[in-house]
Image 1 (tube, helix red, strand yellow):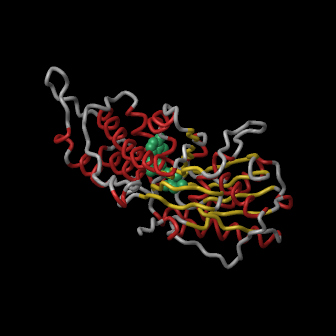
Image 2 (cartoon, rainbow, N blue to C red):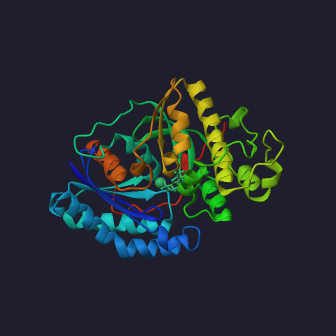
Image 3 (spheres, rainbow, N blue to C red):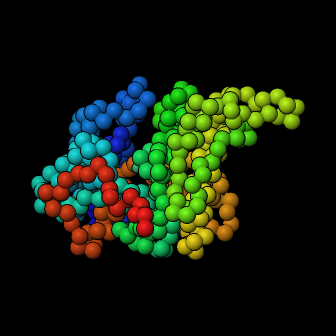
Length: 349
Ligand code: KG4
Ligand code: ZN
């Protein structure tokens, strides 16, 4: 089955063609980063306008690169939630019109479930992926979400923990914005941290690892410490001299604490559920320090999609769309977009 997947939940205008939920024939991602970089953040109005200008061309390019005539597409999937409403509506409307005009099934998908699907894709013809069996623990870490969940099937997720304030990617972006490292912040901090000292600052861990918050995380305290209270947390070297407040040292110390916060909650979930397979997804899953820390754990099987499938892309949408279609699940053309997903809010007892 040949599926066209459309993704426009934020600032990537993306389309892909995937066969049988697995083999990627094409994966086109048109990034809007240069248009938002001058504002140091995504401007929703600009995002939806750019999607409107680009979507048709991006989908055409995905079909062209795959060598697939539109009449050979068996179904079209598009992200319906969560995300920026105006942006979502562009991709969703395009996909619905595409499906309607060819009289093929349409399916609206969930962005976070799509990220969890990414490791099941084969990035190149004939490549073999390390595909996890269900159930496993999901670690969804992006600019908008930080979710630790138990994943029982491609469409069945129960949320164990979330952030109680900022998402982890948001913290990377805000720290980077404050210090002028670059936009979006994650990749810049990751790069700077390579030559920085993780011990230069001892930033505080949030105090919420007990009771009902065992799997939750918080980033507002860390963000405040790094941005407003840097000197309070500066360490001294063995000669008693304070470490330099260099971009590299700030990035390395911040990144270490940000990842430690995630790992503490994740390891609680491993301990309590007995699940030792972890699938990471979302832009922050590209972080080299997070990948290193998890891959060093010999007691865990940690699966990271290749970096180009960690961020937003159409292939993961086409892949999960196929799974719905083989189950006979389609969406009505009346389906609308939704900026939030109540299923991804943790329910407290
Ligand atoms: O999944 P994604 O592309 O879009 C959302 O759904 O939010 O994630 C974007 C987020 C941004 O906050 C970006 O700074 C972060 O992922 N990110 C990273 C890295 N690459 C992207 N964070 C840490 N390290 C990275 N290497
Ligand atoms: Zn995403």
